[in-house]
Length: 479
Image 1 (cartoon, rainbow, N blue to C red):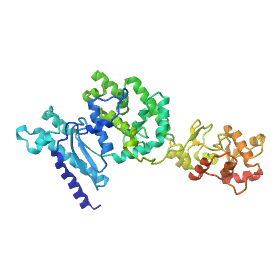
Image 2 (image 1 turned 45 degrees about the vertical axis):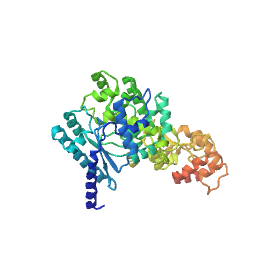
Image 3 (image 1 turned 90 degrees about the vertical axis):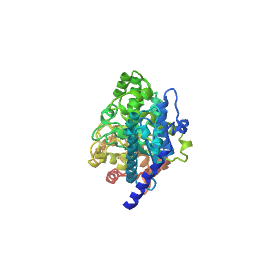
Image 4 (image 1 turned 45 degrees about the horizontal axis):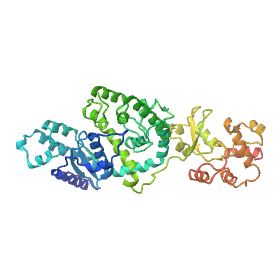
């Protein structure tokens, strides 16, 4: 879009602020209160409900083509909507920032002008603030003013992204004896993006920083379990359980996920209460900023919308699925990705897909995975046995011959796979497989491989023929 056109649209956005004459005070989003779900564990007073109503407005009522100007610490103070239609992202953000500064300037003018000298516009603007507020309160509010675009589309995308993970998360939280509603905290943290990275260094779906994540996860150059949805969810559950034990309140435990448990313990000590609304209103600390004060309300709003998603966001569909079911194989030796490709028959793409904790440098530099690493591989290889390291990777007809051929292309056969490998070899070399018949197709025909796994093999381009390096070995042993 030409810059001149962008400038005209931005000017139009600012012109839209003339609608400020319409008062917004006195519960501007009260209609949203009916959508907010509370219970004995997840409570909310008026302060928190007002914050949550604002978040429902942004996540459910407003699309990204509209912005809202408000006081984040007094969510009943809403000072205008800004139209952003037909603006690209950068232009929309710039226009919204300019609109906020325009409103801030008007509010500052109101705060320093004696009431007797107010213009009609200032009189109308004053109605946006509580009647009990002094002009000093209004001046402070002016400095807190923020502007935010609507998020209905992005929250819907977050709901769709969450669908493949919900069953796993329910299982994890139930196993820890925790409310399954906690899984929706991932909406606030990352929009359910397992690859999310923040400027502050937080990573993964649950946005652990290294210092706190290292208490529950493996985080080093080669392995970073923050990017593994399963491992990081288990870590989040344990972390929240610990916070709840220390703070004895789910609202405070959730707030501590953002502010830190130490900060919330200090808040309890300073205020003499565990009431989350009272802490939000009265606790004073530079590190406890607007996001920390609104964090529990963000969770309350996001989880309430998610729990009613079928009604509020009809037609949801999965944006993409995580790796299907897997079996975990604990490595008995160090193995490089190249060795694993040869032994397992899986491509690099499959190994990466099922093992998101492995960092790209492992594959780029062929770094060995440590002994004891729990490697995830697809389920559904010959269902009678765990055969992750099997198809045509051994030679000989019996156990003695197997022991006489302990290596495949220079790599040792893992002990745990020996009996499984023998069963596969005996099946494959019983004389029934044609030379031109793919190994996995033959295994499927023999009832050793289900149709879903065969389809997955083709979809992910898993090796379904013997590795070329094995042909000579097979020929040399009559296979």
